[in-house]
Image 1 (cartoon, rainbow, N blue to C red):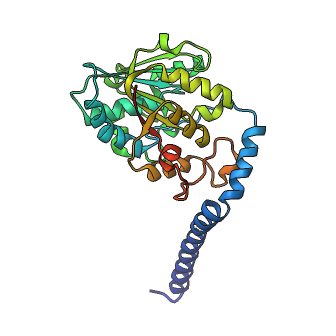
Image 2: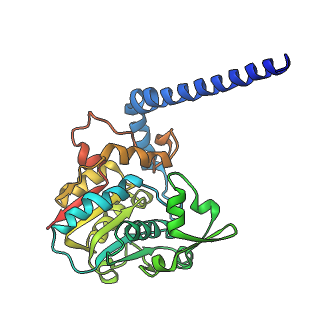
Length: 299
């Protein structure tokens, strides 16, 4: 090794060590400051943002395999719960505001992979005709498919690939019916079959409080009397109130992990965005109702 190479190696090593230290300090700052000490002030700021900010009806951010913890819950304790309820021969799943279809195809792929003999069907709506068209096409770009938590295994079992385009496998597409609907004003009960599982995810925080409550109650009408409801991406105060009003029981399964993973889809300074979410707090008295995203309904 030449004498000139040694200083280069030392400089590279120093650079790497500095990078590791900077990342560690950034994580420590996020945990100790943003997620702990600053939270009481951040919650007040977030409440003001919610009051003053006009909601977007064109926000279409979505992701495949967006919540691995929820999918594990679906294939584990949720299926166990459903086996104990009075279910039909075909598992019916209703998805509200499914954007370009990522959530519906993720659920279809996961269930088909984990339960190859399971008979199931998914009905999925969205407000916009163009997103329904995208969903029905089952055609996505590499950028749309790859993302946080998306593994090669998931991609291989979900898509056929041609160059840089990804096409959902036909056997997964045939499990889903896509259609347009306004989840606030339309009669969803008449548009959907009664479901064993209802997903109202990452849409209610794009509505003002009155509309969000209307959409929640509207979506709940599509569920069977005994069913399981997935609710992520909404006001935590409202979630606690609505699930209690409807006597829904939170599923106590990896609640903190699922909640914190969902927060990775929004910036660290969450209080600046109406769709931001506070960090999990052990000091909260109603932790399960507030932070759980999966609830069992028995009417």
